[in-house]
Length: 53
Length: 253
Image: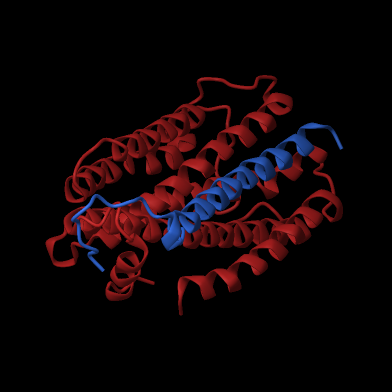
């Protein structure tokens, strides 16, 4: 074609693609937010404190 | 229908329609008599601009419904915000594709033409709207402030649209849907143009649904953090507490 048309279509692909990548990253972060913690990895509690569960 | 299911339906349809639009626009439609291959920009630029208008229209409706006491809910604020974010993306794409079209057609990448300038102002207004939301404040204060800015910013949308009629501009006047619907485009070019509007509108719907779903999850996360602080569960065996909180609060959508 003439280079400008390709550039125009590419701009839309890059723009929308970039936003999709941003949303994907955000989705991953939200999914990873609540990570199961194993009981043996818990912080040691001070003596005398009671288990709240 | 849940948001997830709606997304699963809309995303593949959007992909197929956008692909068909690209094939038709780049390879099937004939070059224009005057502009030659450059006219193929017609199958992206107006549709992208339409989506920007649509997005800001949704933002305005969401803002109005938030400010109206009878319908006041953070759900409307969330809808307004999500739509504005997608609208900013499409306004930026409108300016970029317009600039790429303008260089060979007018000989310049940019000129302080009424249509271009008012569109650039529109982008700045909604970037300001998004920046305003980043200021630390309570959810209600943020929603109220944003709603006012969202409504005031929308005043620029009819100015952008009518700018080619109100002022002498380099940008061409209304071609497709001038009053009376006497379109000056015919045949496969008109159908491809119509397809582009449908495809990009669906793209807006898909991105909106996706972003809205994430915004809901973000609100949920923020609420959990507030609840955790209230219950003072940070540092203890948090997992079961969090799961309990999640199971007791209904999630929208």
